Image 1: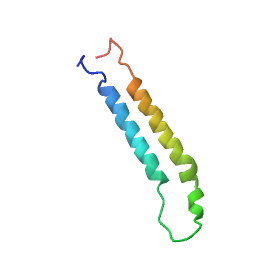
Image 2: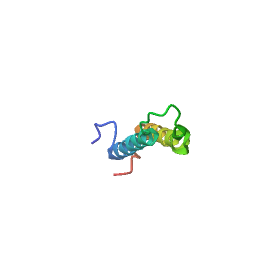
Image 3: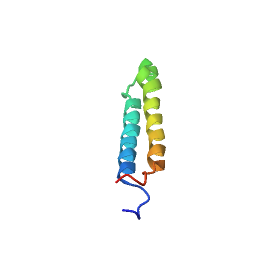
Image 4: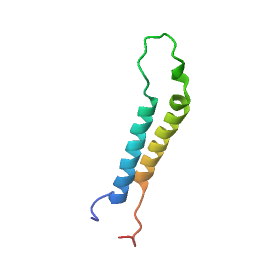
Length: 74
């Protein structure tokens, strides 16, 4: 497996980061309403939690791509 740029650990980290990004976007998703003003738009989940989860996913993605396996590890 020396010919591949990424190893199994890299792909696992990348898969977890993709799941985190998807979870962040699901947390941002809201209900469809016909009301002109919906105060749920400004909830903690949409304004704070979801962007933090997405950002963690993007940072983890960079980490997963940059992770270099040590030479002594199998």
